[in-house]
Length: 535
Ligand code: FAD
Ligand code: NAP
Image (cartoon, rainbow, N blue to C red; front, side):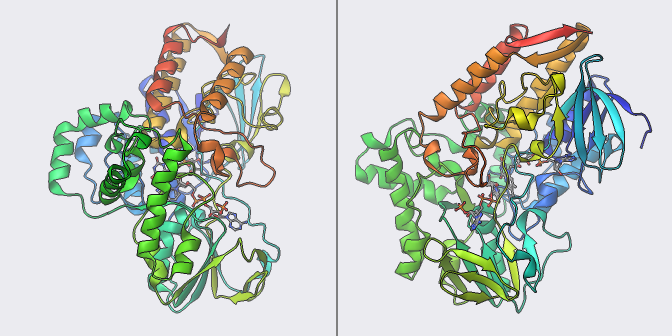
């Protein structure tokens, strides 16, 4: 590792975002260093090694598009790639583009302070290093900080506890064990069928049931792979023109409420048979009209009732408290059918909340459930969690955590007023998690890279969002969110899963193409809404 301490840019995080950011900045001939807390690259796909972890967008689409050579040489084995395959892919990218010499692993960035005299960031790590960089790019991830385990008595449990978001590299053998799984989000829904197949007994503790659609996963059909290889450029372009940046969703351009009940059922059944997120594309009003949404939600509830043998369990698993799609839709392999197994039980925490973790297991208001091991699948402090862990100070020493005390404010989800030369990849206020993240990340990294090049050509010292542009953008983000059913769910999009977090709808739901065009237009107008300072 080189010993210099001054860079054109420091990048925090070595996942999908940080790897590509490094590549783009090096292509410009800039000096850049990536700092990553983990012992390897890969971000999400390095940390989330729980059984069943896999992508929820078809593998070809959830990959970089910037290098046709990379695209052509990498062959995905399954329709929805597993975590090990995704991790191999990201390691391959790091090797193929020779990124490793500029990545320092096992190093956490703990502070980033802006120096107004030099227009540079001073960055401190947990290894006691201090670095200086003109630009600081936060590629810290939107789902990279786990929620705290706040159950009383959690530390008293006698057996092992596991977290889906920091699963051990060597795996976990549940053979012969009785296991508690707490949570029923995507991570739990993917892992429960596999844990149940291995363990003696699994008790699932569910606070809110989730909507899940089948993945119909399997090896990629050679005809599909050949078609993709031949028409890759077109598919990539179609993805970039789709609202969720997922080409294969193909939204049907008709409102559900204009269809007859038979037409609706047929459309939902066809999408259910296709699998994955295509379900939400069955009609064009599912996320804007609650009544339309109810028709899709009821279809899924009926499917749950038809899969799960015990009617009482089926009813508990059927989500009724929020519109389908207003929390990220889960994509599963055999989740609901797992509740037909003799060795799986469901505990509804709405009926009997968890009171404590005891040395022997989980105690609810009704009884104690003794278990050998506990799996916590309780989610993340999403979108702002990783930034909140770093002491970030902008102009006048202002702390980001104070600026964001009432919720995050950004301009385009890319920059923050008062924090010059600090970029966020897929930050709050951008489409981010409402999209195929691979597409969202590439668009952000390209924009940031172009902005830095523009600054360099003009020998400018600092760029930052103006307060006026930021306020207008935040108002727009909220306005658009309010035209949809998204705010009706207590989701992590709103911070509702973290006690005390301000309730603000964080991602931008205006659609990927609209957002991208806006970003491009702003850049073309000489970075409208940004203020620049000379060197
Ligand atoms: P990450 O992959 O989260 O990487 C951020 C990295 O920054 C981490 O390695 C972290 O250790 C590091 N870091 C953070 N703070 C610091 C610090 N202070 N100092 C040093 N290092 C730091 N999206 C989809 O579009 N489709 C999917 O199917 C999908 N599946 C997912 C499954 C799971 C289990 C999870 C958790 C998320 C999933 N996502 C999915 C979202 C996923 O996070 C993104 O797709 C993408 O991987 C994010 O890449 P990233 O590089 O921006 O962030
Ligand atoms: P999540 O969706 O936030 O789910 C967390 C679960 O834990 C929820 O069921 C939640 O219940 C429950 N929970 C949290 N705190 C609890 C408490 N104190 N007591 C009882 N239950 C509690 O988290 P996740 O499953 O890790 O997924 C997060 C996101 O990561 C997903 O939405 C998705 O974007 C991504 N992801 C994708 C995939 C994939 O398929 N590729 C897989 C995993 C994750 P409530 O709903 O009541 O809060």
